[in-house]
Length: 98
Image (cartoon, rainbow, N blue to C red; front, side, top):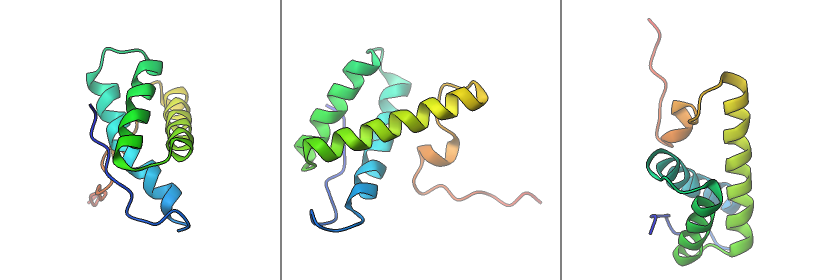
């Protein structure tokens, strides 16, 4: 099972969708970097983990679709196969370029 954080906001909170996406991004990147499963299998595992954590199936599917879309856009722009560093770590703070 892949760890996905539980919701921090109520169902009617406007920040819930972005919270869901942020919680799923870390698990998505972990699976992309460590799993040999197909993207469909990874998505199914991620969806089940999200539902088990308390997210609805619809909001988790929407977040997974957005994450996958963002990842494919990143790949097409620079040819890399992983999201940029700042999307892998929600606490990432860019360093100064002095």
